[in-house]
Length: 304
Image (tube, rainbow, N blue to C red; front, side, top):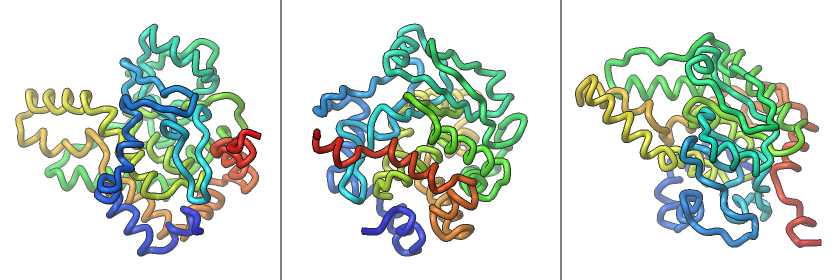
């Protein structure tokens, strides 16, 4: 069976992956499993990944229940890697993260973003800043239309693949995740773009089906639904409906954003594996180390 990297290399497959994902999975019922992260019950004995009131896009990269399936019949391991938006933790949520055993935190924001909103860390965790954009601050430009805003977001995703600073930052993160012990968390500002790209890379390494990777990416719109509504209302109050509509694409994520990144991987490197090794400088051994942390082994799955 083809791996995600092989599927990505084949143009028809990658187009089908990103274009059909939402409608196909909604029709199949797969979305109910993915969206159980928003309050559904689980029966794998691990318990549900908690929702955090103060950090709305916090979630397990492996999904919910028994973990996302892989194309070779395995499952992702829950509790290894988490993703989120900025850690504006309440006292209760800080305690929750401590119970999850998170020991390493990687802040993917720019220095300017960090200065505006400093992280509140769970006790015992060590934090490291990795400015994956390689700029002093991230402030989107003014747009003349919603199409311009969409184009900007797609260009950002392509830059994750082509930009020297982005490749250095994402590569450093993956190497450190491979070497780490204990639960690790990475986050960006809203936890949807930079963090969403890293989650997609980790899920690709785990051989998660590409349709599932897309649906997990789109879950940021579900987790952050209340925040998106609030930001939309603020934009309308400040700038009117017309200008708010222009900036609407910046509030959430769209399929075309992730598609732009994967398209650029195919255009620049041909396969995901080459992007990881040649583009990001992640060794084969580091990829295997990540995979071993990301995927439940056959022995573990059998209970032996």
